[in-house]
Image (tube, rainbow, N blue to C red):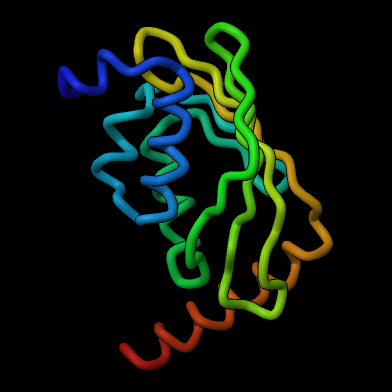
Length: 137
């Protein structure tokens, strides 16, 4: 972790996380997350930063950007409301992430979103993954 990361407040860390995820900057993402990160969401749960990063790498094929709408801070807890913009038929999927910071890193993330539009996103990710696998064979 860099000295710059250590001096960030919870709001700055949470926004840096959203930015790193959208930019597919996995090295920056790793530097922001506690190794024992606890992640919970409608489609998955993970108990380490490495497992979480491996899972979110699959989003890169459909994720165009994240458009932050609101940020609320209460001590070490940050709520980030944003649009997860995809290039799929689903388009934009509203997201809410509750991020908790401990010891200058993100210790836990709880994700909330509507699973109905996300089904379109998931189907497209799987189709693109299958096409990529077939092309490499």
